[in-house]
Image (cartoon, rainbow, N blue to C red; front, top):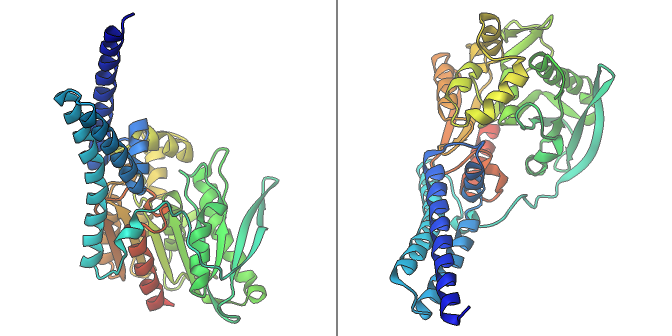
Length: 399
C-alpha cells in the first residue's frame, strides 16, 4: 500500500469518526435541552455532563485542540467545521448551564460563586461530626434495619433533628450516600439520622412507610440519650427518599393504613418541616408523565406490586402519593427540582405546592433552569449552593 493511499484511507476514517462524534454531540445536546430519557445511555451521559459541566469544558478544550491540529495540517474545511461545531457546542452548554443557574440564583436572592460550579466536588469540607454507624432501629422478618447517627459537635443540649432518607428508586441506594448533607447539617447544629429501609420482597409500598414511621418513634424513644429536642424534628429526602419524607411527614400510620396528620393526632412525633429534593408527590401521574418511562415505570411497578391497570392497584398508587394527605395541619415544606430533570418532572413539585397553598401551609419551591436529577451530586454546583442557602434560611425560620 502506497503512502498516498494510506493517507487517503486515514482521512476517510477521520471524516467518518468526526461525523459520528458530531452526531453524538447533537444527541447529547437534544437530551440536555429536552430532559429526555434517563434510561438511555445518552440520557445518562447527558445527566453527568449537566451535573458536572467542567467535563463539558474538558471536552470542549479537547475539541479545540483537535481543531487547531486540523488547521495546522491544512485539513479540509469540512472537517474543520465539524470540530468547530463540536467545540462550540460543548463550551456553549457548559457556559449556558452556569449562567442560567447563576441568573436564577440572583433572582431568588442567593449568593453563589460561578467558578465553583465548574469543579468535580462530591462533598463539603465541614468536620463537625461524630459518626455512630449501623445502629439497629427495627427488626422485621429476621432483618435488622439500621441507621447512622451523625452527632453534631456544635452544641450539647436540646439539639434539633434531621432525619435523612436516601434515594435510589425505592429499591437501591444506601444511607451512606447522603453523608455530605449530614456533615453540612452537623455544622449547623443538627443531629442527623441517616436511615435505611426495606428494599426487597413484596409489599414494599407498605413496608417502607412503616419503616420511616418506626424511625421517628425510635428517635423519640432515644431522645434523652442523644440530647434531642423532639419538638424540632425535620425530614429531608432526595428522589425516592423525598417521596418517603413527604409521605411520612404528612401521615399518621394507624393499623397499617395511612391517615392525614390532624391537629388532634395521637402521634407521639411532631414534624417541624419537610425538605424535598426532587421527590415525586403523585405516583399515578408520575407513572404516565415521566420523561424516562423505561426507567421509572419498572421501579414503580416493583414498589407497588403491579401496573396501575386495575382500580385496586390504582388506589394503591394514590395511597402512596403524598399529595393525597396534604391538609391545613401539614408541616411547612420546601422543594427543589431541576427543569432538566429526566426522571421527576417539575409538575410533580408544582401540584404539591399548589395543594399546600390551597391549605395555607407555608411552603417554598425552587426550579433550577439547567439542572438534572440529583444535581446535588456536584456539591458546589450553583444549584446546590443555592439549595443549601435556602434550606438554611428555611430551617432557621422553623427551628
